[in-house]
Length: 288
Image (cartoon, rainbow, N blue to C red; front, side, top):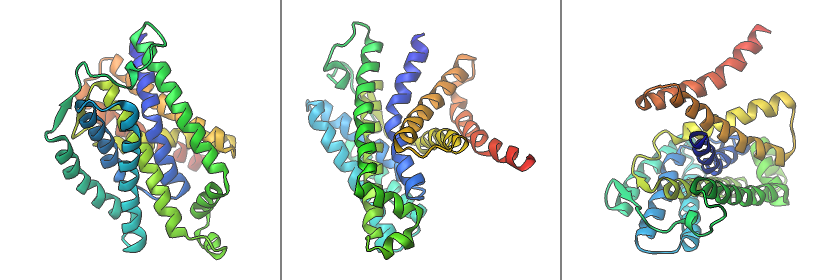
């Protein structure tokens, strides 16, 4: 039971990452690879500040800020320098690798016996359950904020930028500004995921972000499959399904490990699972 509870907690921690990828890839149609770097950036800043005895409530806005700056930099390179969005993300991600290593000072930074977000409040005597309730409350607040933002006039303009950039530009909206803000928001959410995962697992590692975009993308694709099949238009339901996709994705990986698959093959299993999610619906549509 604890094994799957751990997977549930991890899925919720990745929920913020999934929301970030949902904003960049599904709202703005931008394949943002900055994710790998901004996720590690959030973890690196969290670890360094914790080891310097900074309170977790002070670390939170700093992590949001550095993640937003990373995303905004990608947006600026893409919109102002007219560099392909994918290449812009790769350039920033590569630069962030060196930055993260500089911030941490070494490749791995343990957080043994240091206070964290999960030790601030004792909701349950069971450590795992206590972590679960805290993460659930944290992600609920984040989701409510994103849902509210997307329902405002500014959020509608963001969504319109992704749906029809030429139309919304004709209405006087600065689409470049919208893209920069959107990517900043997406990477701030991604950095938040690194903030949560680092405190949950008890260390930050320079390679923790490698391939993490696949996990987030898999979560979004699971949600998108349901959104399309059920013709869901509600912003709130879309966000909840993205969170559900993150949980399902981690549960599938947990089940795979429980069957005895060597953890060395976990990345291969992850990529294969995402390929199946993407490919099978298309094959079935062709047959029909």
